[in-house]
Image 1 (spheres, rainbow, N blue to C red):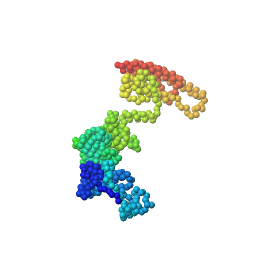
Image 2 (image 1 turned 90 degrees about the vertical axis):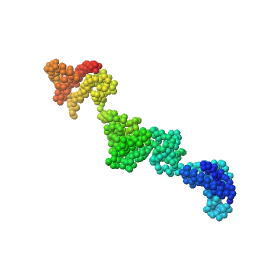
Image 3 (image 1 turned 30 degrees about the horizontal axis):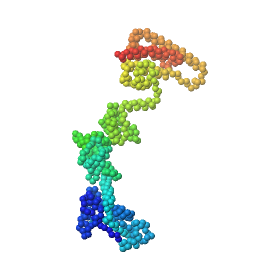
Image 4 (image 1 turned 180 degrees about the horizontal axis):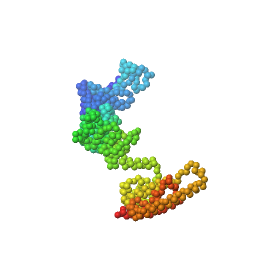
Amino acid sequence: MPAFSRTSFAPVPFNESILTGLEPRTVPPNTRESKQSMASVLYQSIELLSQEKGIDPGIVVGAVEEAIALATRKFYKTQENMRGELDRESGEITAYIYKTVVADAEQVEDPLNQITLEEASTLAPGAEVGSEIRIYKDTRPLGRIAAQLAKQVIFQKVREAERDTVFQEYAHREKEVLTATVKRIEGQDVIYDLGKAEARCPKREQSRLEQFSLGERVRVVLLKVDRAAKGPQVIVSRAAPELVQNLFQSEVPEIYDNTVTIRAIAREAGERTKIAVQSRDKDVDPVGACVGMKGMRVQSIIRELRGEKIDIIEYSDEITTFAEKALQPAKVSRVSISDLTDKQLEVIVDDTQLSLAIGKKGQNVRLAAKLLGWKIDIKSEEEKRQEVEQQMTAFSGGPSTPIEQVSELGDGIIQKLVAAGITTVESLADMTPEQLEEIPGIGEKTLERISVAVRHYFGHFEEGEEGHVPEIAEGATDEEPEAVLETDEAEAENDSAVLTEAENVEAEEEDESGSDSNEESEDEPEFRTEAEDAVEDIPPADEAEVETLEDTQNTEDAAQDEIETESAASEEQAAKEDGA
């Protein structure tokens, strides 16, 4: 059997004992007390290192033995299986090759790690098939390079053991609130000391209102344990909602004993937090219990969060009621469920409350949506009214008439209305007097004129529908052309009679009324013409025959010319009055 040497570590300071003590040293003969002293110092260093890193001393011993075996194998440039061994009594470190004994050469599959029974008996008498034989290597030639290699291996093993220990310690404690001390600041990250490990708080998990000094003790929420991280693998947060929940549990006894429960929390760190609470006891006010007398309880939490605003809301199982409370301090007019499948709500607020309900940069409605777990669409009363009008217009599909078709308005008024965005008769008819008065250049007289013109326009439209030629009954298409001509002639004679009668009635009324009727007609705001008076006296369509097309056209043209003349005069008078 090859000779092998025994090495030990010289007593050196703690930080360098394991790293520099790997270089083989010859132990003087007959120095048993010296060996025991060296072994004691070595194990003391191992125990101190284990306590500092929080790992088992056996892991450090295994790291030392593995490092010696690796350094020895590399020195001898062999691929044989090799182990290191540390003697606890003497502190000696040995390295040996181990091989498995087989019966004969035919069974040898791996010459590097197997040996025949005949060769094994030469090295170690009494060896048996299947046993393991050790061949020790001399460690005295190991020098500085081997020691550096062993140091790197020890560092790596200790670091891996430390990371495993930290992972096992904190992996099952996610979302738990821990007390930590600010250790240092690296860039935008804050490094905390948890006692057994270091934790990192990235920038995204910090509150913009908070600034800590070294050595300050704070509460943090353990988010996760990142086993693959290069630096501290424990990630903590000061922006998590669990921090607010823990603070309320500490400050409010009713929450601690579950009399009041926290149903939901929505938070934007450094800005605002909304928390929904519910009481299990009907005699306990959940909001009042969280606020405390004169706000003492909630103020204590606000100070811990460096001035972050907190809204405490009473929880409700009715989603619409809960939504109204969640959007406080804004006052909500009504809430409706627009889509139950996608969980979408439609909230209507007064025009003056719209900006308050949305909040700064949409913060209020965003937090309310997080708190509810529903999508929220906020609209003002005016927006909702316009939306309904558009839907009704689209549903009805009615035609639109250009405003220029109403000739009674005059060019001046039409230009003012078009400049204000009113281009159709239908949109003009839908507007209220108050809305029309807001248009520049439109006063009371002009407003009356617009009202009369629109009323006349729709009145003529209705008359045109009533006076339309009746539909021909079935079978009438088979009549002779002569019968049709006779009917037209009879209708013409009846129309002439009706007009003559209307003119006579009008003349009699004018004689009787005299000058008094003229004064009353001037005071009337509406424009009345002879043609209109005659039309009013005409019997209904079911009593009088319909005029012929030619006579009707001539009568309407004459009436229209007279209306336009009076409209122009009224427009000038209204313009003068508006100017005054």
